[in-house]
Image (cartoon, rainbow over all chains, first blue to last red; front, side, top):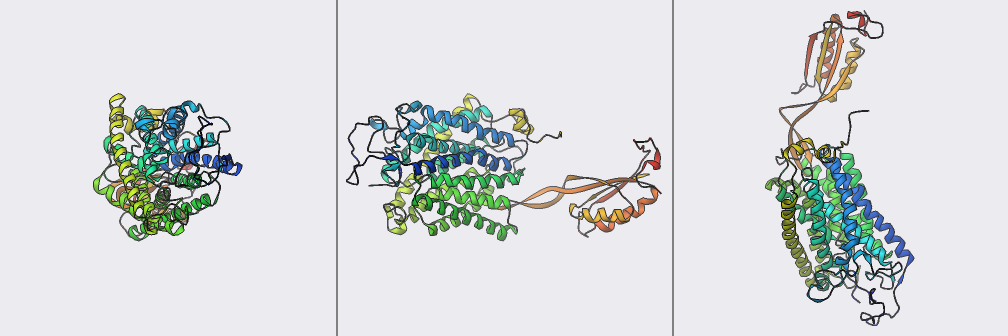
Length: 449
Length: 115
């Protein structure tokens, strides 16, 4: 049985009487809910929640100037709230549901809209390594919800300090609906066309990081530079926030990657191990590069390196061993270092908090390196170039290319629409005042005791 | 009575404070300031060293009787100096009067340091 990514159940949850068609002689036993797996995925869902608030909020919030920190927090909280609602109303259904006809490989239907037809003790149709011992369907819904929330939240880094709040809200809802949901359907749904091609994306390197990273580059170019941006960062206001945020992201990433096997087993433990090793390697590599090239190792540097390593290993976490993880950590850090330190400076685009330079580039490296380094020692039917499977490299390349092109085009179109409807950029005066006061009438640090 | 204000390096603050106490200036106030000049210093951010014109310094300030001014200046010059550009400056100005709020003492009597 093919077990690369989520595989749909032999039992349709909508029509429980339908005859199994997927069984291939492995077993006729109906899948059941396993309490150990369920306990771990409940925890993992909480860990991924922690990544957006407060992990990402602190990481991004520390990097902006103090007049804009609350705006970053507000955007993260708002994304959590509104995308969750979008997810249960129709997001989950169009992502992981199925439809009929020509659209089947590209988008799900509305059978699970408002989560109707999903009952309390239904078994999840999706699994990775444990076909019989599964988790409740509703748990799969909430686990995936956290991924749907963090993906648009990553884009906050690209247009920070200058986007209108109404424009932001409208943009993330449209983007989640027309970019995240379809792309996740292609790669993770059992109907998805990239899934059927055999594309490997364990925990969302392409669905989350390439997707959001490429969108970040597009919106950063479209919204334009901040006032006074001259190829130099406007200084981060609270580096301990950045460090705490990175710590929470690193911690939450355990749920993100080790939970993506949807079970508490050896595959999950391996995902934890390689995620941690890749993050450590990338953090170390960045610190050494800083030390050698710029004379001093910096905190922002080691934090950025860790995030680059985490974003890059995401895709490969279920397919590589620690050798692969170390290679991925080093390559991720070196290339991301070059991208944010030299390429961004050279071209002068204002990708404010390096959402593209770290997440987008990291995702792309992870996508391609998965095609090279995937080893059958981890999942027996998933191998890459080094294990003699040249075809996998091609599949990964197609996935990277298609998602990149789709994300560029759709982000461009949606951002234009939002600009026409409500506008995307705050006025010059509001930007100078700081978005905290101009948009939310609050200030993070008052001067009154 | 004179007011002495000196802009010094933050890194020399401890030395200056001790030297002033040696010179019988028992109480000083200070605050951190940022200057913008043509001198540039480097700051590292995400893989790149950027030049910045913002310079961080500390201002110390105190009011003292005339006879303490010269020893205080000497103490600051000695303790705040590193010999490099950007060691700072001292400004001295006249003070017209002073009042101790607790008991209404005026003039030099109101100052912390007695003869």
